[in-house]
Image 1 (spheres, one colour):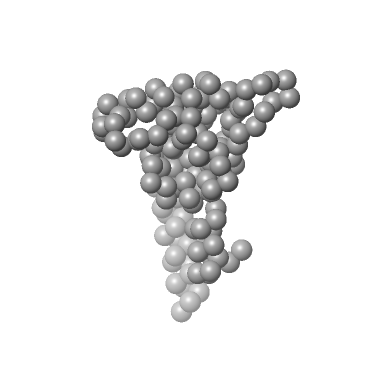
Image 2 (tube, helix red, strand yellow):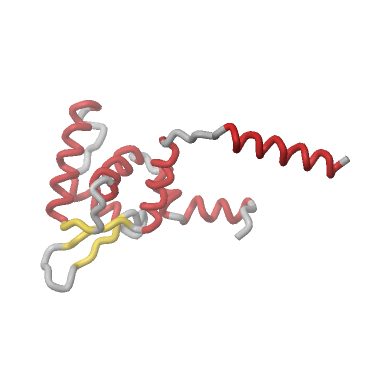
Length: 144
């Protein structure tokens, strides 16, 4: 897919990963979903457990930033994040259970994984730098 203006604009408007990164409460969403799903390597969580985890997360954030910063309940946030407007979580009923379950959508997992990769320190060794220098010299020699 070419990354011309129209394509990028369409991605910005429609792709759940981009919407997550641009969301007003992206730090809340990403930090919570990362801690709940990716850090413990959990695929799915029941609604009551996830609501409890988000309640705790919101409690600590409200202590730090004030109660007006995150005005909705944990259940309201989860419902919104699983709705069609966002698509960051998938809400479903397992065959043998009465309680809804949640899991991350692939777009959400990709966005969070990308953010995690930004934190990782990258080491560029001397050998790889020399390879780059020699490649640039070769290109200069071929171009002249």
